[in-house]
Image 1 (cartoon, rainbow, N blue to C red):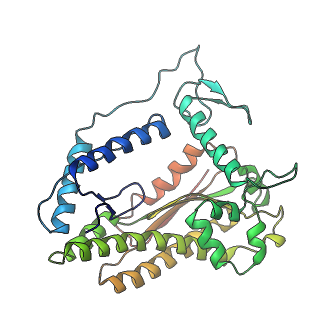
Image 2 (image 1 turned 45 degrees about the horizontal axis):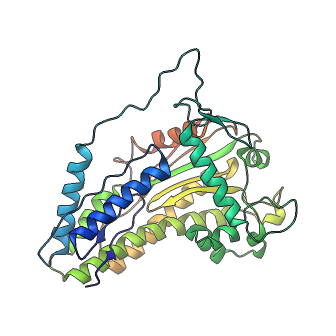
Image 3 (image 1 turned 90 degrees about the horizontal axis):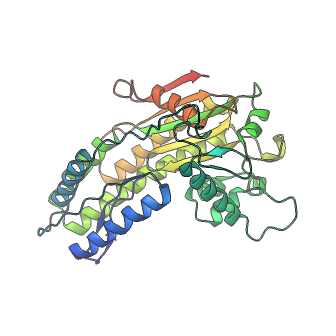
Length: 344
């Protein structure tokens, strides 16, 4: 077997195999430190286990048990600050006290939100390296593709209209609101696969008795198939409803992918496209996963849930994200595919 191998990259979770425990512990230490530096107040649980058997399934089960124990032992920290007459609350998260004023726009932010916004701006500037002209400030899908963004690559690969490549992403929610019908609303979608943890465990146990490398490769392929199904579902859903950029006021794509990782998707788009994209996303995801599962010998039916809301452009992002999640969660155990709605 190779000394180090990434078995299951899946959203916020992953499995990595090392040849020695020391190497695994060094990786865990570096990952915790990197995560903390990048998120300022975030934390990540990393469990290190050893196995002497050539049994991939048993090793993964042991790692899952160790991780659950580690996470359950973590103290619950209440980060909600006390607010008084002499303190101001961050306009971005609405939770932490203001520490500094951001430059453009001049928003009073806490240290966490300032760090995240600054990192996002730096990423956009890196995407635009090589552009010339005083008025160039936009990030295009090609810029995202050139920095390794898989979703942008998949979207452009499926594009039937060449002008998509030069179209830029919206800079603000106001831009999306101006082209929405009705105006001054945007669509906010949050998709999350149904019972993905159960499906992963079921598929893992179906590999019992297979040689380690064969089982490891199959498990990694299954996880990759979930991420690819999410990408293909959003790409096909957007292509189904979007006009070419030349026909859209403002010459920018009327959507902005906030997050695409594993079976999770967070997407901003023009308000009048939200329902069509949500419904088609569910249909395509199920079709893609059905084909992938059949190829990998898995018989479980894999579906996704999508929640949406229509906030105004000035609605805080954290409030936008809460509403679709509320729509998704209560009925996901009852319906195989559920599309919920809430209007601000």
